[in-house]
Picture 1 (cartoon, one colour):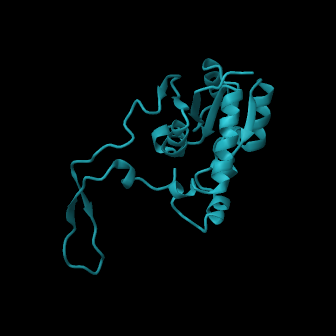
Picture 2 (cartoon, helix red, strand yellow):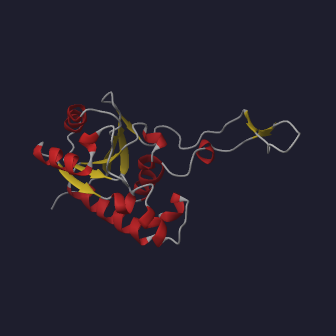
Picture 3 (cartoon, helix red, strand yellow):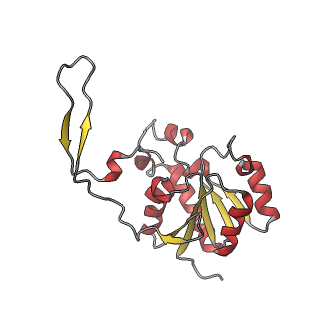
Length: 196
């Protein structure tokens, strides 16, 4: 029986060529790509469209599994099963997410896995903000693969950064008062969009 893996990789394909993408997978000895894109299609990089990438990866000796229906960040099917919750962080309580995480962990225990999405900057993607955090709870660390071939542990950088400066809020067009500053002690995560 294979020993349980305590590590998973994460990669964003962005506008990479397939050759560069496959090269990064080989560099880090990846055996399987788990696709967590809700919509696995792109006009700009068609070689990452579902059928194409699945075929190319298999021809190159990698396994491929699509879990975007369970773990995707813009998943309408998941939102519907969660009574239309718009906050992705609340969706992790849904059965679809739980089922997807179980499948992902099963694959991590069997193979050297890279979780794939579109966003090249992992700290702006749900691979980091949601999946890496959830995997850490069960003892699996996430290593983000960057375009330059470097790998960085998901939690080498802090998840939250306190913003000490002021931000400006624009008032309604009908108010005669100028915009006024709001002091913030909010984390950067609260200022970013809710979905990755």
